Every structure is written in structure tokens, then in C-alpha cells.
View 1 (cartoon, rainbow, N blue to C red):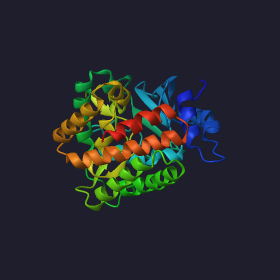
View 2: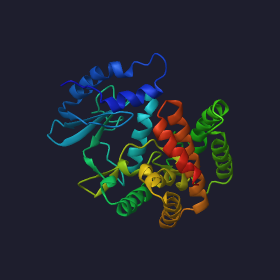
View 3: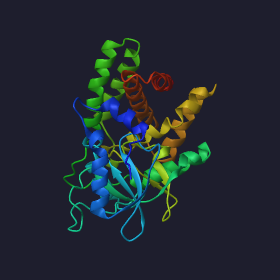
Amino acid sequence: MVFEPPQRLVRALGETAPEGDDWLEKLPRAAHEAVAQRELTVERVQVPGGRSSLVVLVRTAGGGPAVLKLAPRRARPESERAALLRWDGRGAVRLLEEPSSSSSPSGTEGVLLLERLHPDVSVRTLPEAKALLEAAGTLRRLWVDPPEQHGFETVAERTGRQARTMRASASADREVAPLVEAALTAREELLAEPPEHRLLHGTFRQSKVLSGERTPWLAVGPDPVVGEHAFDLARLVRDRVEDLIAQPSGAATTRRRVKRLAESLEVDRDRLRGWTLFRAVESGVRARRVGRERDAELLLEFAGWL
């Protein structure tokens, strides 16, 4: 089996790879070792796959369907593992291999063996209103208390790193400076009095909710963080942003979506709007920095509606 990383993964990791990083070069060998250690039978590499990991559809030694996921350290796979253990299949894909188990193979860092879902069927395939409803219901199940003495990054820490990069980008690109300033001001106000500290998915959107067997929809691919509900919900607000931008009533539709999602999940509407603004501007500035101009234009236009 040739473990050729999909071009989507190659492009995405190329945008964030530190100088001298050779994870992609070592990936085929690492995948072969992970498969051999676990006595897996490979079916195929998932294409186009994700933007931060190689996803391989496999069968276990007992013949059961599973997914093997390999991710570089900068994608925080061990944090994902810890979150999946905490959720234990409630609202999220189930982890099939625990690192503390005596039966676990060596070399588990960055390698996750997961329950097989239907990789080509996400809630994004549903009509928009139904998709938002199902996605929001799934997200609610993930909002649990983090373990005591947890090692998860907090919203304040993550957005702090992002804020520093945003300021640097605004200094070099005066066109985005007003939106960046508005986003940074919103962040400072939101962090002053967070209403709760819960374990969050971190990168939740419609395409991260897949069809399953034991329950209709389950979340995958978290980049977990601890903070308030509105931060997690904010990424869902801008789902299908290209469709929103194409609508003559896109701005009004966005405001209605903020209101509807805030009410359905009992989240303060102004806090949701603020985090949606910050996250959209951060993503837009980042897209612009790496040359994805079309994505940047969409995201920054969307942010201007907020």
C-alpha cells in the first residue's frame, strides 16, 4: 500500500510547516509502521481528506472497520486523544486505542485508531436549516466539564497567540486594520467575564459531523480548547460562507443565524456575535497571509456584516 498524502493535506501543511519540518517526508514510513504494529488491513486513504492529518480506512485484526489517523505534533493529536477519551463516544467519534493500555502498540504519539463513521456523509449534505439543527444538537453534547488538572489550551491562550499574529498583519496591511482592531477589542471584552469554562471542540463546523451507526451524527477532528460555549458556536455561524456571500440578503441571513443559534443553544447573542467576528477576522487574515486571497475576501466581507 502506497500512503500518498492527498494534495489538500500537502498544501495545508505547507502553509504552516516550520522551517526544516520533514513530517510529510516521514509519513509513508510512519503509516506503514502504524499499520503493521496494529495488524491492520488497509482499504484506502481517504481523499480529499483533512487539512492536518492523513486519514486511512482500515480493518482491525478482528475484521472490524476502523480509521487510522496520523497527524504532526503541531496539529495537537495528543490533545485530540485526551478530548476523545473525555467524551467517551458521547457526541464524538470513539477512540479504539488508549495510550495507557498495556496492549497498545509502541509509537502511538500522533497516531489515533478511531471508530469508523461514514466519511462521505456529513451534516453538510443536508438542507441548510436541517444541517444547522443537527450540528448544533451534536455540539451541545460535547460541552462537558474538563478534567481536573487538564492540559488543554484555554480560549484566552489560543486567541492570545492569534491576536499577536493579527496585530502584526494589520501593521503590514492597513486595509485590514479596522476589522482587526474591532476583532481584538471584542476579544478583550469577551475575556473579561467568561460565563463558563467547558471542554470545547475548538474547530466545529458542519463538515466535522459525520454519519454513524450507533448514533446518527458524531463529531470528528477536534482541536479541543477550554472556554465558553459561544467560542465553539462561532465557527458554525459562518458555515457555507460562500453561499451567504452570494445571497443579496447575506448580511440579514447572517444576523438571523446568530439569533437562531444563540437561542437554540442558550448562548448570549452578543457574545456569539463577538466571537464570530474575532474568529472570522482571524481566519481571513491568516488566509491572506498564506496567499488564499479568495478565502480571505469571503471571510473579511462576512466579518464586516457583524
